[in-house]
Length: 204
Ligand SMILES: C[S@@+](CC[C@H](N)C(=O)[O-])C[C@H]1O[C@@H](n2cnc3c(N)ncnc32)[C@H](O)[C@@H]1O
Image 1 (cartoon, helix red, strand yellow):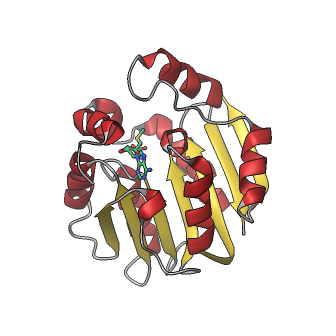
Image 2 (cartoon, protein in one colour):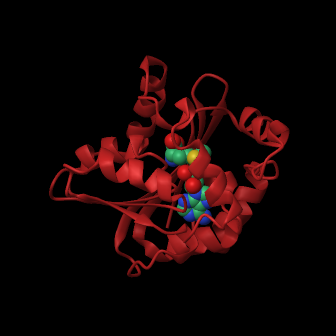
């Protein structure tokens, strides 16, 4: 992966921006609480976090799975990856790869939970990305798609960005359901509101 990829170059340039690098604040606590209510206990679990950015959630997930678990994080942006690697340097259960979700080499069925945090709109081929996630999940494993803001607000920001992400949209629920079904996943929970943002939970 090189920054010749325009989307990777865009996110490289954003790696030090407050939205990407600033520590989570008190306003994020209830959103993470709702997320962890869906994941259940994570100790010893194997997680996949495609599009980890600077690793803010990666660090939290790595502490949650503990040394008996694993978090496989990846990102297409070298600078995002470098920041994430630095953040989890003392957490050996976390690995960060410079790779697109669609091309991450993972054994089939090796993952308990996939966490897509604020990245789903950015997958160029959403069906292909979901197919790779579904393949990596064990039967009964889960996918959580989370955004700290509601879908309409996210899509509005991207639409008005005037950059490489301006067409990166979070699909409507009907389209998401069709994408999930097409890869053997089934939605079991969905919430989208301007207080806690977007959370979709599907299982294999
Ligand atoms: C909006 S940022 C979110 C980063 C992080 N999850 C967070 O919430 O701070 C989206 C990230 O996804 C990465 N990304 C975009 N397309 C990707 C893909 N196909 N595979 C892996 N990462 C990707 C970008 O480089 C960027 O770091």
